[in-house]
Amino acid sequence: MANLKKKRRLMFRRKRTLDPSIIIDYKNPEVLKRFVTDRGKIIPRRISGATASQQRAISLAVKRARYLALIPYSLAHRQERSFATEMSAIASAAVSSGPGRGPRGDHYRDRGSYRDNEEGGSVEDENNKDE
Image 1 (cartoon, one colour):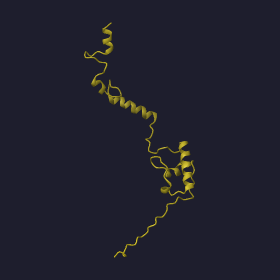
Image 2 (cartoon, rainbow, N blue to C red):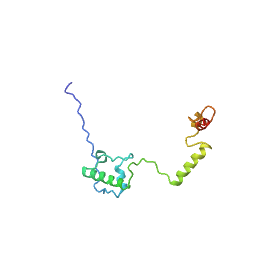
Image 3 (tube, rainbow, N blue to C red):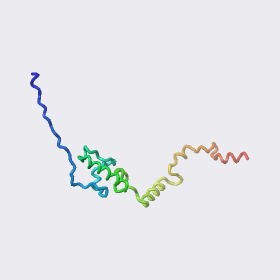
Image 4 (cartoon, rainbow, N blue to C red):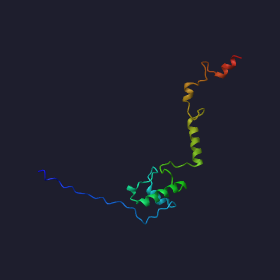
């Protein structure tokens, strides 16, 4: 019974290879985006299938393209708003907060200011009474 061992079947995975006809250039951001994750990290060689020289060329091209702002450092950034959209967002926030409220709302007013005394006057009024 000890001689009846199961034979292992060796499964060989086919190596992933990168097409050598692909021209890796920092001026071609569409090609470079294939080698960058959504977090902005350069995809490693074992996943992309690039050779060592291709991987060096990819990393150099990605870094140059980032520096020249052809591709972003991180692809997951929010889209920037234009000046008009930014101002309308600020205006709508001011209108929705109501009159007399600051950007923080009135939860500071509910607690009372540290400058207010028991009569409702401010500390400056109390200082002027002494004179």
